Length: 337
Image 1 (cartoon, helix red, strand yellow):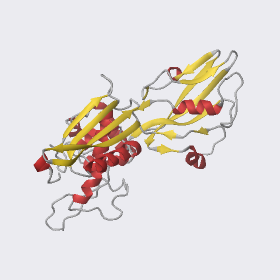
Image 2 (cartoon, rainbow, N blue to C red; image 1 turned 180 degrees about the vertical axis):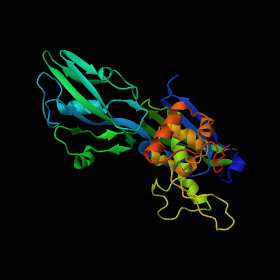
Image 3 (cartoon, rainbow, N blue to C red; image 1 turned 30 degrees about the vertical axis):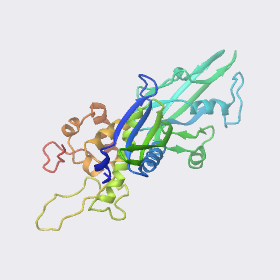
Image 4 (cartoon, rainbow, N blue to C red; image 1 turned 90 degrees about the horizontal axis):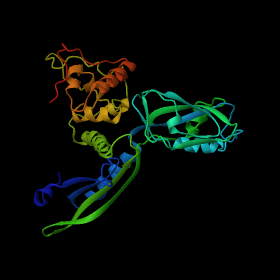
């Protein structure tokens, strides 16, 4: 930390829910901080919170009898554009990263909401009262909705250029589980030090993860990048690229007949784990794919907050890329405290 903290003491961190029992909208405060650090920390966290946290969103929809988004449907009060806008408002939690198709159908007169969606156990509807479409008497509708897991914002135009299929309507996908981030820097003082700062960070999520988990995820992600500047072993050009065939393929370490070989470092974030699983791994010191493939099942199970569902997610994700965890009797397994 800054040498000034020796004089003013360590900063105090607090997290206060806006409403009692609501862990999705929390105001965080940290201070006192040295001059300029409030803006530095606040801006960095805000950018990561809004752009780099994984989440689930509607990516496309296919409606029976409809060829494009500017069509209207007989007996349906909403236009196709309105239906797409309503689908963008869905709040979802998806546990697996694979693309999944859910369905919605009904006959009028009726208003179909998110609770009428037919979903698997892999998807959780967080706001079942969101209205999707209103059917008049005699009206009916059948639609297939594609749910994807991703990061940030992906406009419909990007998908349309890659997958231009008749009848498939692409939707702007807002994957970020963070709905709002606002920060301000207040003046603070300790004794005669009157130029100190206090950072106030207001974070609100859609419910797919807690606000505190979102901030922790963002902080760990920033930490994984900042560590490159303080690391003695810098990543050479090309090693940062996700070459999965190389991950976990390092030979034995400590051969006295050869010079030390620098271990590749492929950031674990590119595996697109769920926030809970990724947090548990990073908090346990597993920051790269190479480190992960040196862990055994029993070692992972001992990590705090790492359960059976997280273990299955890790094993499946590695298997999809031709990788696996270390064997229990492997001498080169990773020992973590």
